[in-house]
Length: 380
Ligand SMILES: Cc1cc2nc3c(=O)[nH]c(=O)nc-3n(C[C@H](O)[C@H](O)[C@H](O)COP(=O)(O)OP(=O)(O)OC[C@H]3O[C@@H](n4cnc5c(N)ncnc54)[C@H](O)[C@@H]3O)c2cc1C
Image (tube, rainbow, N blue to C red):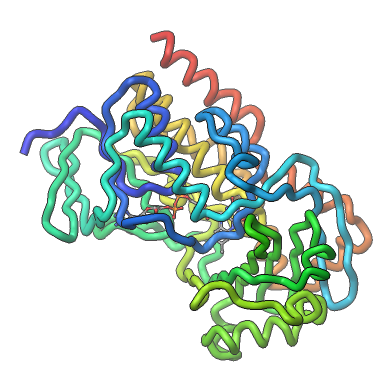
């Protein structure tokens, strides 16, 4: 099998689509393999931070036009107190069903070959070529492969377990009562309780996203069925009980994810294998910045590829750019889950929320460095 010069992207989430988009916009041929047949919901809090907005705008997409809801406030709720703070940057809330499909559609419109219903079963490395073998037996071969399968590892390429591996995620969309929708307003509400936390925010079409993160050990104690998980969260949070009174579940069943390697950042890599998004760096959901990192990785990988850099150099650069932030975010997430009383310090120093929000974003210097590489690639 002759290796194709066009890079092969495995996975069409924000990271994979961003690589495809940037390469296609630069006039390069690129093929993207995505296992889903059509738009679908994903386990995610749906929060889009400032950096996500910048990257989406750079490829001609506007969250507002896609129907996103503005988020201006973060409200922390514990059984003892409620504190809120204005977010130090503009943010939006948009379902991944809409966001991911918009990115894929735009990638195809820009000339990328987007292949749906293409489930990669394994990735082989033979004679400097990368061969993606699909479940149905089809094969693609390229000199450069982009591993963008997000939460799911491809056979033969597992990630280490990270530094906070034990959390299990549940997500459900609710239709809140009119009164509760108004009270929730433009806030993302974070509620802490022993063994986990929840995030609640409005999304488009009059619904709200409830995402629950719970330590696996607590899950075993309370039972892992959705009704038991939801009930234990409601028992621990009178505030959430109030919010969800009369609310209607909008998905036939919750979406779930486990064995998420929070805190993992890929240090180095093999020639021709570009790890992007959650395959490269997994920031805890508490910070709501995983999508931004995915878009950032995608833009950085494409810029490095276009400039002629190798995959290992890209991987080391990305590690240098994001590892401190991911480390800090993971430390905070471990503290909040392991010691819910830690949230008490927010009662005394509510400004801490803004500081934490700023410190766990992609740094301005990383964004600037990536922009310069892209500029050099275009000039070259
Ligand atoms: C509970 C939770 C809440 C979160 N909340 C937020 C939030 O509010 N804001 C935020 O910014 N981030 C949040 N994140 C993080 C964010 O969801 C991820 O960081 C982001 O989705 C990573 O993008 P990605 O493109 O790397 O992977 P994904 O979005 O997971 O996309 C991977 C794609 O690859 C496809 N795929 C997988 N395996 C294969 C295969 N074998 N063959 C072909 N295709 C394949 C999948 O179908 C998918 O489309 C949250 C994460 C979790 C777990």
